Image (cartoon, rainbow, N blue to C red; front, side, top):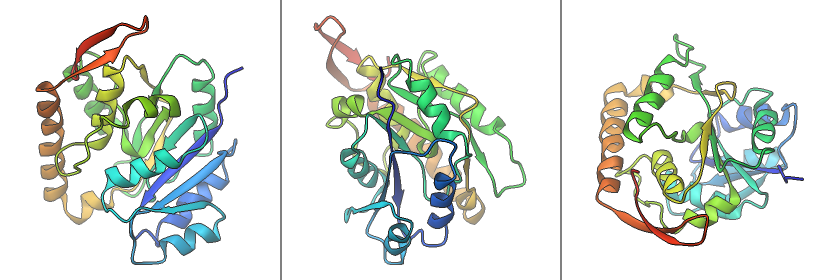
Length: 246
């Protein structure tokens, strides 16, 4: 029988205003997560106090940056499946249930789904779908991951953790992680029913910076990996050379 116990990891930097609602939604899941880890990324507000008041586990990562916070949380995770979301997200009640169901087959290493902005006028996944399909085009029809709605196996994380990029300003950390998982012969799937409700506050507060910076980092991620090669053991144990974008 496949072990589908889940560690939920939430990176958080100065999220005292939104973290409580995220944790409240996780507490109301149809199937509860087996562990929740809030990674306090050197916050200066009450992020840690709020997390502890909700009875979840808190670890502190003093080196600021999403990648460092994510990595710390993934390294701290105890259970076989690691689900990552953001502190300003509101997981629908069936989120954990769908994750457990999809990983019960044992034939996937990563999972993602649509991200919908709950506080913007256009509550639709159409932009999200266009983005994911564009990534698939660049990756020869292979899927990618999305930070607010990202789930991988702990065993796969152990395989790629020493290879992932560590500079937030250079790459999209979720796409970068997906590229390394694919290079390690991992399987990523997208479930359209696995919806995550995320805040669009960063788009509203500074749209030019958001889209400009994200676009640059997006294409930079693929540019960096197109120049790199890594050696990976295949299923039969043989070492093969793989382009990270293949």
